[in-house]
Length: 370
Image (cartoon, rainbow, N blue to C red; front, side, top):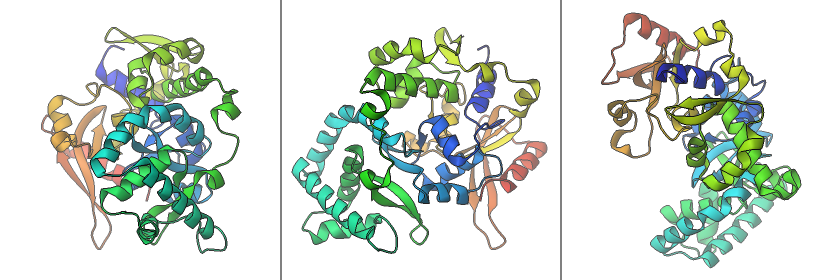
């Protein structure tokens, strides 16, 4: 790929932000495999942006129907993904979490036995909520209250730690939307997720076949991308990924990115001129969108100075990014006001915003999924 701008153009198309191919919000999520989901409002926008005519209400509906969930399939970070993918993806990566979770348990003064007890209490409370309760599942506050009532020290970061552990272990996930609390309710994977989606069910127990499926999907939805991108994204080992590579790229196009092998779908590589031109329009992307978070090296998109502005203090909290004509221009956020939300742009240190670009970004803001 000759230039960073051309790489961004192709990735905007591949990730579904240009000429989206998804026919539903579930289809958009499944196509990307996992979407970074710690900013719930942001990931709902990112999903809806990839389905023409959709809104956040469509994402909420998919959550309530149990087809989109959030969980911890990889990197001890919460992701939005298809309910049919969480079981086998979580199973693939579960062993890699052990050391990090043990270290965190030691820091917090908890134990595996205490977490197992928290799991039993959670499953009991969730089961009761599904037997005639007003809504399935429990809020995080209700879970913490149940844990404390049972004598567990569920205070501060321990609540989050219990939840992360139990989600990684495949017991819990974030499911239906609670409009009152503005969050997803916690459900039991066994009762909420569709059955038949373990590695044994989907791939006959073949771990390599599961990695092949995930790698193929990643390269199609993120390409041009490299094996190191996928290894960083998932934290799967390179040896396993290389074994899965031949079957995963059978119908893909191989090219080079700075001397490294990369792959892309033929549809993206051979995109029509009108699609290529469409990538030059304005975009307002939530802070954790896959265009920014889906690759090991963000240098194709942001200079070091720009990256420091998008992620102040390198603290893992990403600001929204405004892109115009294949150039990052500003960070952005919504400002509430009586007459409706207002767009606030903060130019990047390396950019200036022309009147034309500002008008285009305002029009883009007006069309954002609400």
